[in-house]
Structure formats: structure tokens, C-alpha cells
Amino acid sequence: MYYGVVLSPCYGKVERISIKSESRIYEWETLFMIKSQSGKVETVQTSLSGEVESLEVQEGDYVIPGMVLAYIKEDLFVTGSD
Image (cartoon, rainbow, N blue to C red; front, side):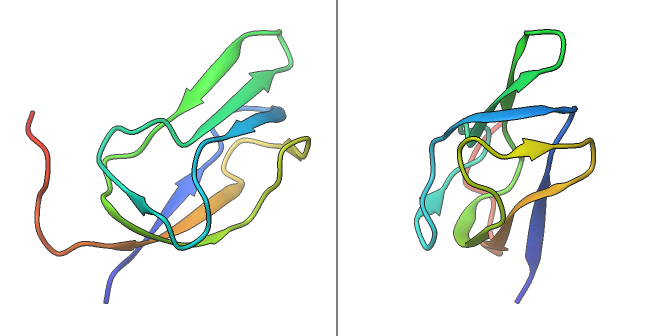
């Protein structure tokens, strides 16, 4: 079993969470929207596909770069393309 981690790219506030715990995600799907300190909304995506093991933040939470947003139980096969 392999677990992936989704990390925050910036300082900011979680504006929207597009996934739910135990839901299925696919490569490059939008997972989180974070409003950075500069006011720009950052889209958080990942190259992982699999099942959401746990969400570590809620909408309205403040985050810092490198903070864990979610853990993903990875599929062992590639589902997307380049």
C-alpha cells in the first residue's frame, strides 16, 4: 500500500475543498483552492490517483507552505496521460 501526501504550496486560507474523505480522485483533478496572502487564488492539484485516506484541513483554515492538506491511498496503476 502506497500513500501520497498533498501539500500546501503557499501561505493562505483554504477557500474550497473539492474532495471528501474516502472519495476517489484522479490525476490533475482540482483538490483545494487556497487564497494566498497576496490575494491570488492557488489551485492545488496532484499527479496522484486513488482514494482520499484523510483530509487534514477544513475550509477556512490557514495554511503554510509544506503543510499536509490530505493523504491519498495511491492506485498502483497509471490512469492518466501526459
